[in-house]
Length: 403
Image (cartoon, rainbow, N blue to C red; front, side):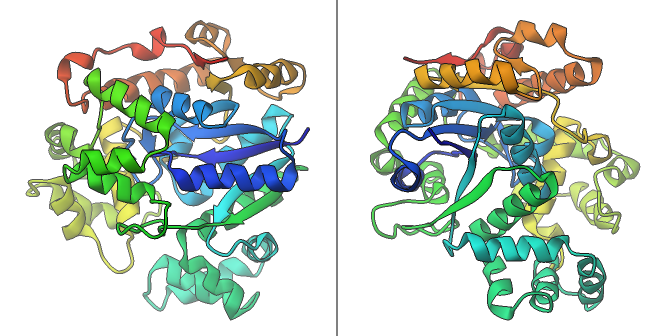
């Protein structure tokens, strides 16, 4: 039996994700097991997840994923490189995963591996610095630098978001020197950032856009059955949908109370970007206005969004752990429990199946879990119904276990 690992956000899960599972089973075998490594309550682009993590993990298992592990916060809300590296670390540490599978616009794993090798070569940093000196954005500079090491055709693949993540996955596998093999499926349907339906498969962006604009029924009609059921249950409980705007006053209050030195600790590139963010935060009346006023051609909006989120959550990139310290289970079915049984014999990291397991962790790992506790308590303040936002749920809620 093959075991496929997937690094996911499922924000929310949609038919394109189901298509990926189907295509992987067609290639690796109908009995392929799936281990998902999923972001928690906050996502890589610096935003709140639409649904809390245990709800998204339930929907994933009801839709075909067998075991869902959590990608801890310092990796879930980081750059694509760190996001990918954390996911690969977890999949490798399970000891049971044979393939890393992902969607991409190109559907060509060999091309993405070539780009990963170029990013890893000694000549790349100098080429990148030279291109950055021309004053263009980091993505454009990186693409031009890579074109000198591979080919313009391969480098052009980095114009698409799923290809970019795919290259980072391949690079992380290369750096980790693990036996997991990459397998990619060409993305079908609506593009990653698309807000107009293409074919039968919506994007997560489209579903969130519909919900934000009040087109709830249309959004629900486009969701897979399990996701729709979970969404409706969370909505009835006052916990969905979760949007950043729900916590906007709290976020602006946090930003206005910070000093320039506080903002400097958020600037991992040490490029002076924090000054723009600090100055704009003194007067901005919304997070969207703050991002619009701070963004430049060189600084991507997602990078700014992450800095704002780090500020709200009290995170500092310099203090981020270097390695994932544990494997935390969010959800599992019967086959997932079988995988856990195998993992208990071969996993490289401790496995958390209940909050009480934290007491057995080393101090640094325990502090990471407590960081998750604080972040979840702040996430809950963005629930539509504040009476549903009781704190401390991380200490009370175990994994979702299904048949």
